[in-house]
Length: 150
Image 1 (cartoon, rainbow, N blue to C red):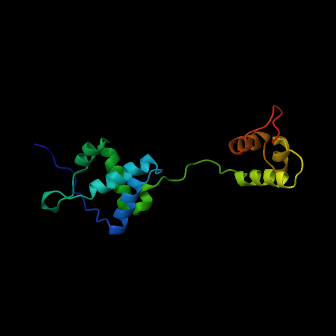
Image 2 (image 1 turned 45 degrees about the horizontal axis):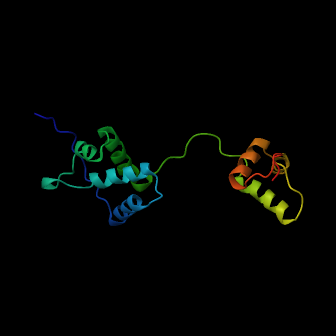
Image 3 (image 1 turned 120 degrees about the vertical axis):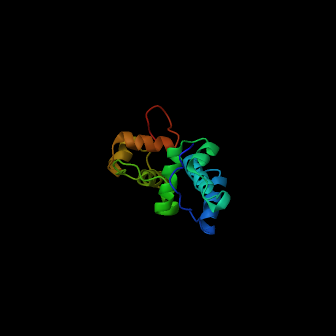
């Protein structure tokens, strides 16, 4: 005889929360992690016979994830609702120089009809390393020539 799991409290999603979760699932550019979390919460919102919430094991089997995963995201949703399903900020030092600062220096130089700046010159004007300036320049503007000038 199987031992029943803990008694689950119904999630009681509001219509607005349900619409947001369904929107996340339909969105083409949404992170697949967030889509899976939305699917888990929507599946946990269902009720079985007698108005009892669907078990976490059943949801895990249906979605092909572990029971621990279902338990984690169900708990996070009950604690923080929709905000609990999004990714938390990652640790690490924030960027000291905004990408926009480097782009501004480059566009101002081009707009003034002036000189072609090297990545070292851009880095000196912005106050960052040459490698950071080079990385931003390469991601925005195709580098011309062999000498690294912009």
